[in-house]
Image (cartoon, rainbow, N blue to C red; front, side):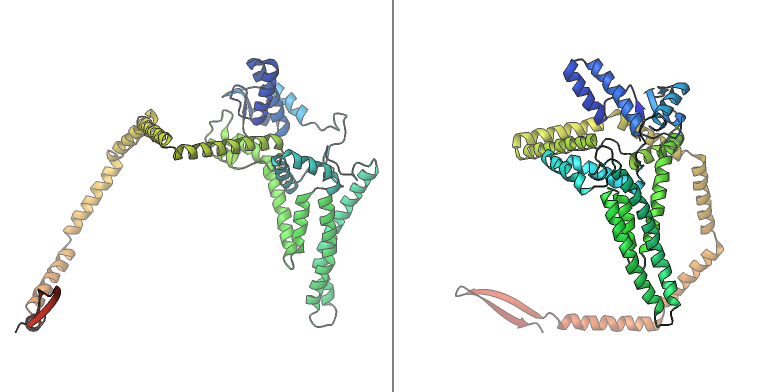
Length: 439
């Protein structure tokens, strides 16, 4: 979750969309900008979760370094967005999604909005029948829409599904123990097989219920128990991982705020930027339609850019123009003051390193060590011994005899080898080779 600033460019797709609509209606840039910023702030507050009013105040700025709300205003705004509808006298809030359900639902809705309009309408028509027990606001299933019956049936199935989870675990854990008491060969192995077969009935029923309720994360964790022998362990790992993800989601924004500081220039601000840019809130739903529209526009722009570059590359005139532009960009890059300042700073750092007294001291110590090594009597003695051994080896009569014999063999070989000479004469338009032996 990024910080929100009033005096900043319109980069959020939702704010851009509002700006275009208001500007088309009023033809006033200032009114469209104020309206888009106000609605953008409301959307930001609605779609982000803040642990405290201080976190909210530290995330919203009038301009860089200047916060938009004071402490009292931040507390009022935080209480408004963190008071449940039931506390305000409204309807009972919908059941909160867990981490896996939120992740799967987020990507399904995002992919749904990427589809063409005709396919979206078809899916929207059959969706209540595909997920009859869905309780998602505005997208309830046909069973959930039934007054009284739908809510009661959903509540009963929630209880049954949790009991089925427990029954499946007990069947896989305790059936082998019970069968082990029976005096038959391989009783425990038979118990494992029977326990697995019993648990699959509860698991399949639960998966059917979870998919009908549009709880794909729960269906995924329950399906892991279908793996023989290791299924129960995999399910426990997935459930523990889900709790870790939920904890991370609740602490993520607070951690980013602490690392970046109130002004965004804290000592560990780079860690805050890293978490903010390369992680996401698993429970944050955002606006999938706006995200899908922004992605569509980005892909269309990239496709247009690639096709235009391809056409320019095939056109000789355009190709020469692009080459000139590339040369111009290269010259601009060479004369870029930032690059020059970086080069200057690098040279200054190098010069400073060369004149560093610690480096000079190390250099002097290395030189002294080298001189000590040259003057070492042990090294001198070893050098003299090596020279004496070499002189003795040169004066060895056996070595001289071997050397003379080798020279004689080489002379005989050169006299006998390569004695054939080839002379080429042209006769009757043919080449003829005449060979003679040199004796």
